[in-house]
Structures are given as C-alpha cells and as structure tokens.
Image 1 (cartoon, rainbow, N blue to C red):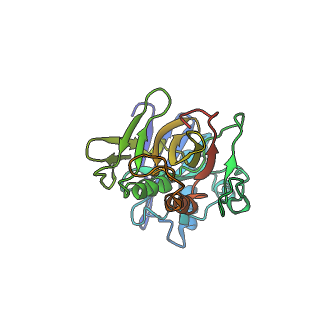
Image 2 (cartoon, rainbow, N blue to C red):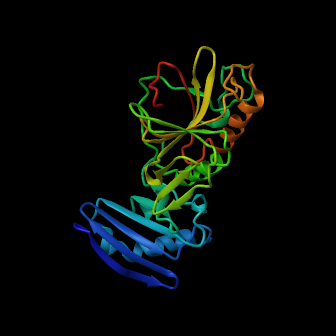
Image 3 (cartoon, rainbow, N blue to C red):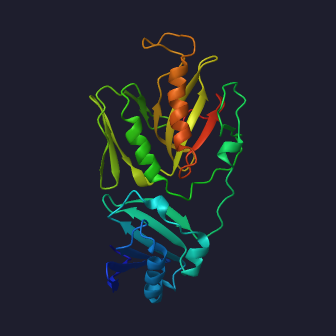
Length: 292
C-alpha cells in the first residue's frame, strides 16, 4: 500500500513472529503467537515491544496488535493497563480476532475516564430493580468509546438474531429501512463484516465501525415506550437498531395492558450486557433526535 513500509519478520522467537508496518506518524507491530489466555501474555508483549523498539520508537503513535488465533474470544482476559503500555514504550494495544481480521478490543496509554458505577444507579420510572438508567441532557458532550467493543456487539447481534419477533431498523435520520425477522438466520462474519439476513432482506454491517452500543428505553406514542438496542458509530450516527416486541401491543399491534414478560426480556438482556466494553443503558425522550 502506498505510504507504508512493511518490515516482515523483524522478530522471531519460538511461536512469536512479529512484523512492523510503518507509515507517517504511526508504527504498528503485528504479533502472532501470543494469546491473552497465556499467563505469560504480558511478558511476551514486553519481549516483542523491546525487540521491535528500534523500528517504532521514532513514531508518535506506537501500536502493538496481537492477532488471536487460538482463542479469539479471550480479549477481555488481557490484563494490560495504560501504565504497562507506557512501560513498553507503546501508545496502544489492539487485540485482533485472527479468524476475521476485526479488532475486538483496544487499550490506550492514556488516563481512562472515570466510569459511573452501573449498580449504583436506580431509575425513577416506577419499575423495580432497574440499575444503570440515566437521563442524558441534550448538551451532554459526546465521546467515542476507546474500547472497540466489537466482541460484545457481535455476541449481542447473535443473540438478538435468535428471536424472530424482533424488528431490525437499518440506518437513521433521513433514510431508514424497517424489517421484520421472519426467517432470520444466524449471522455470518466475513472479512470484517457481519451479515444479518431474513427471508426477504439482508444487510452487511462493518464491525469495526461499531464503537457504541446502547440499550434504549424511548418515549413513544402517548404513555407508551419502546425498547431496543442501538449500534452506533460515535454517538450521533445510528448504524442499526433492533426493537424488542412492544410490551404495550399484542401480536396484532393492538394496544394492551403492560405485558411484563416482554419487558422482562429486554431487562434481562440489558443486565447481562451493560458495562461490557462500553455498552450502556440510556433513556431517550421525545425531544431527542429520532436517530438516537
């Protein structure tokens, strides 16, 4: 690729093989042979960073990308923090699923934001046991998540695709496509894209573009609410949403008293995913943009 200098096999030791990609302002060490499940994972990273330091030390951004082949689902097992990265002379560690080429976790060598404890919050909606519900003001400053969050996003997409009562909405803002889940198939991942397909429609979602996932409780018509999962790029760009069956409508879309089992399906899934890799729970009022 133009503008890149690729140094292949600059470090080899046992199962470890590292190459370096250099381009303006950014040097990336591509490492195979180190898995997060290995107790010596951090030591292997340090050894690789030291060996490759002459090829990356003069660049502003110095990244080490560990390609996971034996255990691509183990990214969260990597106990590496910002201090460890600084000690290795790196600015970023990324963990790539070697089976599809998608970075599923990224760790930056900078102070992490102070998280708001999920379990410390309670909603004022009158429904019991709803931790983590937050009203977000319109002028709240938005930041993209540092953690890629794609591993949780992919697992969530797989789980949502098991229910043929869901409604998938592609896009946001000026153009959207609403699709029921009749005949929905298990998602397939290829070359960094996940394909979601049902009887009469399908779409391809670039996993690397998903850096935000929100479980949303949204004001709807009158006193009704809708419940869905939103996949976003940054905060403002909606990529796709998956709506749960409305607790306020029956199977014929007629108004009915609250069906607690439908609401509980949303709450149960929310409680299993919120706080994983930047997955959050928000409440959207009718004043907020429709694409949220």
